Amino acid sequence: MNASSHRSFLSTPRRPPAAARIARSGGVIVGTFMALTAVVACGYLGGDSETAGPATTGGGPKGTAAALTTIPAAARPPYTVPGGFPAPSSLEPVRAKLTEIGKIEGPTAFTTRPGYPNYYLTERKGRVRQLTVDQQFDRDGKLIRTGLYIERGYVLDIAREVSTDGERGMLGLAFSTDGRTIYVSYTDRDGRLKVSSWRIFDYSVDYSSRKDILTIDHPRTDRNGGTLAVADDGFLYIGTGDGGGEGDPDNNAQNPKSLLGKILRIDPQGGLGNMPYGVPAGNPFRDASAGAPEVWAYGVANPWGLRFDLVTGDLWVPDIAALAIDEVTKLPRDGAGTAGRGANLGWNALQGNGVTAGKTTPAGAVPPAFEYAHFGGECAIIGAGMYRGLALPGLAGAYVYGDRCTGQIRGVLTDGVAVFDQRDLGVSLPPNQLAGWGQTDDGEFWALAVDGRILRLDPA
Image (cartoon, rainbow, N blue to C red; front, side, top):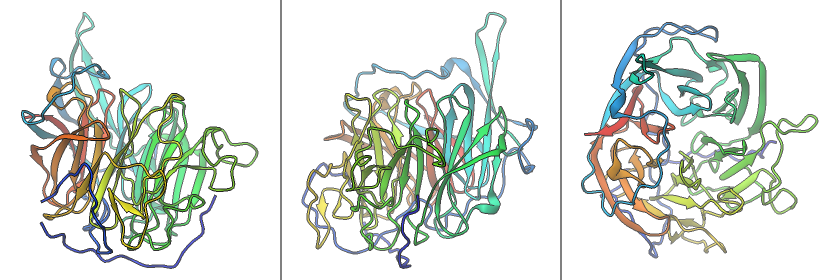
């Protein structure tokens, strides 16, 4: 399905004035002034080197790899989704560091693959890479160590089809629940948002199996969204930006009939006839004319980093807005096992808890778990998700995020309604380096840097 195209307009970024604050509530009036808006702004273009050496193009057999890091197994139990941690009352004791694991070119997304121990990353220019997890056991079956290797070859290479103008590129990555289908989101040479899939072998895709699932016209180079997530039921969630421009000038986010400024939910393997996808029965507009059937939730500017909580199944939505306040919203998992059905997150009528100048509050708008204002050089929240790992127990159940421009990494204790504590975690990246996050099945977070580094969040 194609969304209608609109007139072209590129926003002009400004330097925000003074220290970021997180607010629980308030009557902030949001005017029409601009801030840097997206994860790939500020000269995003990624690095030009990789730790594993020169790459070979295309798919094919497993490539040669060089060891990057050896991790003692005892310190980091593998592939465990922990639960039942008592919620900490303060994040003050938490001190973290970033451990560099490897380097590729311009990473934008990081994910795991069901049924496989390896990790997968997108390069902004249009390629998917594999980070191999090589486990070694003793004679008694005890894990001795885990080695991590970046494969030289590409799992998928469609660089010739991908535009990297402005904030465009290959932006999202996910796998089907059986691990045999790979989904990627990207902007094509015409600037359209696309989601495509391939069947995947152990180390590369079957190029002949390609299916172009969804194509959406996008009028500008900024605020593309692009995050993908697959729920337990196999349905694919797609975060789309609002089309760009200052304050969503086309009012896409509040229009349920537009596919821009939305969280879409489709069945990527359930299409009938010539349809490349199906629409799940629970979608709020599936049988109504009030909205597009693919729309699951709406009212977002640039959702970058959709993440399901590994323990609760709640959906956390960090939204990089177009003005001076970003936000993170919790969409709780309901009795039907889904999160966020029909939710209106408020943009562009709201930004955080404040009403945008000239707008009114939409009925039933979902308030954010917390706001993130740009006051001291901050420009864009890069949300990681809810921490569920074992390496940093004091961070259990906290939401982790960083800032694109300052590079500072923080944690927030919140139940999705109130904020109980928020702290710097004693670690940061250089300014304008944080590009995104990934989370492994053991609940740990991995940061992606513009210069190509892949870094794990570890205890200091």
